[in-house]
Amino acid sequence: MEENVQKRPKGFEKFLQHVEIVGNKIPYPVSLFIYLSIAVILLSVRKQIFLQSTLLLAKKLLLTICCLSTALLKC
Image (cartoon, rainbow, N blue to C red; front, side, top):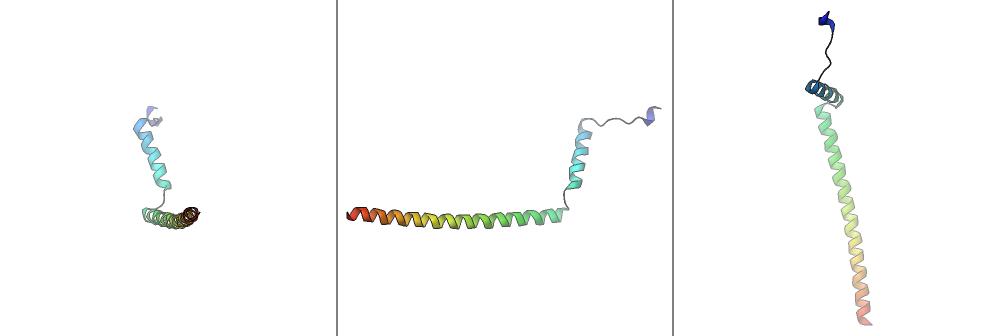
């Protein structure tokens, strides 16, 4: 009669069961590597575009400040 009773998992066994469940849900390692590579490439392109637009704005602002300062010095 005691052999039919299953024990509830405790502590570390419960943790390992959760790890197995999560591990079974993640994609195949090669596809995971490809997804992460694409994400890194897209983020770096986005950052580069942001930096270029920021530098363009900084150049315009600097040019405006220079023009205003030279105009004020002539007065």
